[in-house]
Length: 161
Image 1 (cartoon, helix red, strand yellow):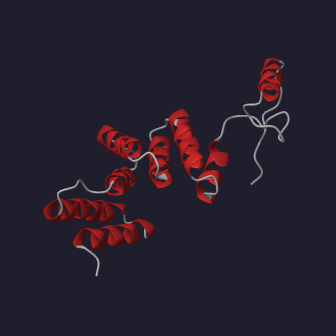
Image 2: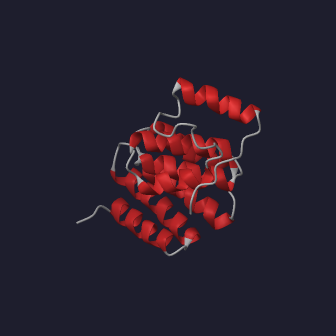
């Protein structure tokens, strides 16, 4: 049998899937309250991260409070790629593309096989394709030739859809 907070959390996730973001936010708040009522430890960071995301989606854009909550959750539990994904989504909604890309990268370092993170990074990455794709993006040759290409006005790489 699920604890009351876990039950609220699962219901909230289902509401997010149905795009009922305001209802989901209320369920995430209920999960946090139920957890606080029965446990001495703080609620899981996922509860806060999804609460911030649900509020931002319900309002159409994140408030400063949502940004802080999502950022705090992502930094408090730095080993959860889902929290990085949620932070990325909130940052994109706020027009903070550079910050969103950093969250993508952190998430992919934690879970390199996460297809959702990989697809979203490809869709929003502003960087060009490396000159030598077989070498790492940080390889000195790619960095030097990439800077040269940029200085000469090389074309941007457009990811395949």
